[in-house]
Length: 93
Image 1: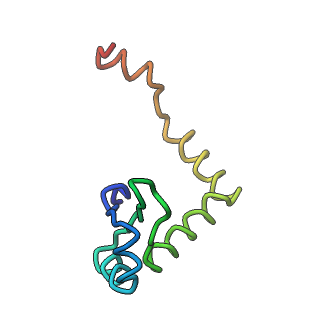
Image 2 (image 1 turned 90 degrees about the horizontal axis):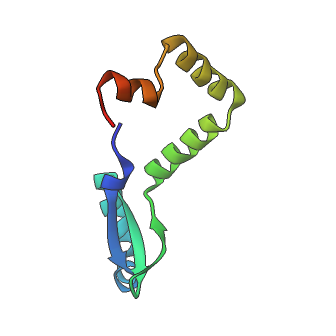
């Protein structure tokens, strides 16, 4: 799984207005997204359609009670340890 923040690029509103199709094509090729800025303030995000569909699928899965129940069950069965136990085990303060 890739870290999403590494896929973020920035552009200004003038560049977006001048070449919206080109920005979407570049984002699709690199599977990245563009945060559109105006005067160093974010206006919005240009996301390629494939990435958007992946987001929607993930959001739908995360809103499913059955999916969340399976995750909780797997975590219980895995027998994880708490952060405090981890710190004690590796002598981290």
